[in-house]
Amino acid sequence: MNTQRDDRASLEPCVVGVDFGTLSGRAVVVRVRDGAELGTAEHAYAHAVLDRALPDGTGLPPDWALQVPSDYIDVLRHAVPEALSRSGVRPEQVIGVGTDFTACTVLPVLADGTPLCELPELAGRPHAYAKLWRHHAAQSHADRINALAADRKEAWLERYGGRISSEWEFAKALQMLEEDPEVYRRTERWVEAADWIVWQLCGTYVRNACTAGYKGQYQDGAYPSTDYLTALNPDFADFVTAKLDQQIGELGTPAGTLTAEAAAWTGLPEGITVCVGNVDAHVTAPAAGAVEPGQMVAIMGTSTCHVMSSDRQAAVPGMCGVVDGGILPGLWGYEAGQSGVGDIFGWFVRTGFPASYAEDAAALGRDAHEHLTALAAEQQVGEHGLIALDWQSGNRSVLVDHDLSGVLVGLTLSTRPEDVYRALLEATAFGTRTIIETFETAGVPVEELVIAGGLTKNALLMQIYADVTRRPLSLIGSAQGPALGAAMHAAVAAGAYPDIRAAARAMGKVHRGAYLPDPDRAAAYDRLYAEYRLLHDYFGRGVNNVMHRLRHLRAEASASS
Image (cartoon, rainbow, N blue to C red):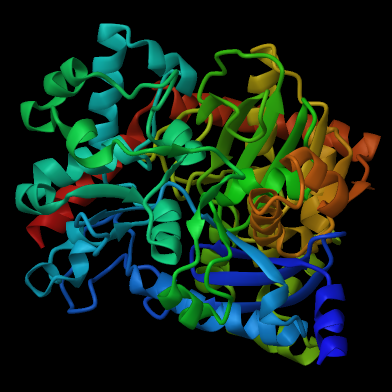
């Protein structure tokens, strides 16, 4: 028996990271010593994204995107035990668990954390559900928030590049108040899903500093004032004090310890450290070794989030926020992003992939994306004769307008699916270049671009980004960047490392200079990018508001039907 105890004592400590994405949650078991990923598992949300109807069939208007919180608990029940089983790690080796979430995904709950959608009398009310990050139906409310803040010269507005997004906490809450006052009244806590899942793990509600700063306008220790909220809507006056304000937990610190109930869900030991929550993009930066000023990380999936730390504070037009210590302690953390990237490619495959192409792809053993990528890779820059705007899900940065929509210019009767597909790939790269140039114009240099996320496996896309941005691309060395980052923060919270920089040095993974820009292709892309910027400013900066007019017409037609 003594020998058995000695063997167990010699087993290396591990941590678990859980990444809650748009359609599924992923768990990874990570060795603390070196960041080795010993076991992973994924669990798809049973309800996915509710963008047409609630589970009971209640219809949803355009631009809604909701989720069912119980799907998140199912990830803990299934993905975590499966990852642990695959890893071969004994439960007693695990010293902590960390989580990250898409943001801003936010939900109304009772004081004990019960989601309002789980109350039978509210199950048919859309505002009782979690609003996913890509819920864009609060754009008009965001517009009012921005206009009033600008009129009053609210100091916090500059920290968000002059505009806050319809994706964020205040716009979504104001929409709920004005469209369903009863659900708003029943809401006792307005909670980021990143904090709600931690609450379920440890029984303690702690509001993480990342989402509070970037999605809740929490700056210099304060939210927007009661006077400001009253001016928006008198019934919104107590939103912060009654529904939002909560203890702020710094990143990489303990929120509590794992409860017996959560231990039963996960198969992890009761009492281990549960780390304060975090955002999927921000938590990825140290996992990708980006812990120095000027290293921009683009986490590319259904959307792209660009995060970067800097020793300089500046007002970057259209950024999603700058927060002191928002990513790494001692540095200003910046965020920007694109609301649609992988979603755009997926949309085209669903709607623009002919049966003949599907047959050819099947014969070659390719899926639709692989087939279109292979065909597009045969082209020279500009050969397809197209230019696109990547706004099928609106524009997050730098225009901060989710009433904008996509554009494709140059179609002819000879245009092929691979031509459009490549133009869409290029459009997202042009969007990233617009963000980078906006940062540098504002005095915040971008010295390195590190790519993380599922789209890193598309070599053509990565080379296009290198050529368009004229920068070497480094790639994260993990397929589970957010989950790895969450696990690293758990290691810090559990006391295995003094801070996240030390954890990044030991556990982070990056391949430097994986893709290098080609001078000839870069020069050709400069010409296409100039056309992109003309369209970008023409449709996006008020020269022609046709996209807004079309959206209003669609809303009117939808209401009448």
